Image 1 (cartoon, helix red, strand yellow):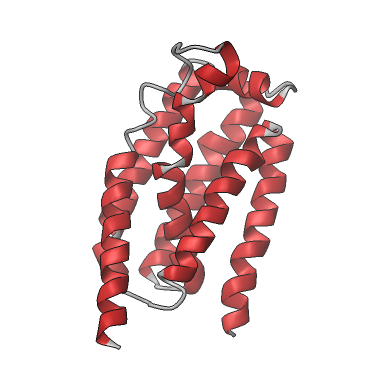
Image 2: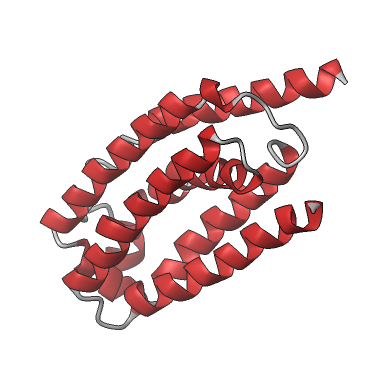
Length: 186
């Protein structure tokens, strides 16, 4: 059954990368795939081997989800689909952007909260995937202006990109601390 704990996240990540590619173009799988892969590595070092008490991380996780939704609203309001279009080299409609970032992603992260509370293996993967996404991938917003314009310039999403970072970092610290505590007890 442990093989499913490894294969399940991999299959999910492949599906998610394909889905994000269809809706967001090349930028989707680059950002999502990077966060998902980083989350998988962290999952292997934490929740895969040490099923720690997730009640200690659920509040920071849910706060980061709320801040992510606020961040997505800023992206929507200031037209992040245009930034995704420039980065991907193909048209990303506002509808496609909202389908992925405004509906699917929040639904996925809220579902992840249920899996985390239940302490299922895939829940531990969601936890690490989300924390890596919020602490690393969201910071890509600060690189996008340099990629697009060669200099700093406000682009949609920059003002709130760091919001989910604070509770996600805190949750990540708790995750690592709880894992170490369990490993030291064994």
